[in-house]
Image (cartoon, rainbow, N blue to C red; front, side, top):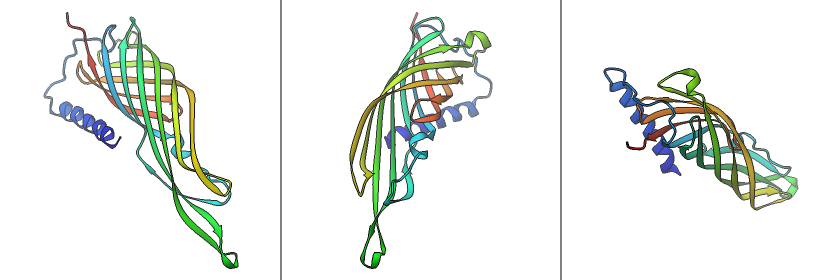
Length: 214
């Protein structure tokens, strides 16, 4: 997952460098959304729900939270004039660091350092409606996404009672986000979206687009 995170940052750097080195504005020959086109996207999330909502029960003391931001990969295909479908994959890895509290001799409090690793994998199907025909722009593609994700969640040391245990959970969650893509070239763009998908509120990324020949 660290490699995927580095790949996202590298793609941002390549796009930014290409834009800076251009002596003139690139002319785009395709609409920002076209039926029959394919795109592949990588992004990372901000305002992580699991990172922010970190509570400890009685008998445990909260410490810092570590880990990487949520990471997303998505393959999208334009099935209609303004409608596309995407298959998505997401990963969120968070480390909850905490102390388990014990009473020693003379009732002094003894702290034992522990870590609870959270690993969340999500697999989703998303439908997007594209509003590019309303803004009449060769570079901006605003969109609305609606779908769902199947999630697999695992805690390595979930605190409960006076002990910890491995906890796993499988559940479905809705996806609802609005956002926009900005195309630097016909094939490379930047995008951001905001809304709800269980993992985070905001995500930023890069997208690569491909067209049918002929």
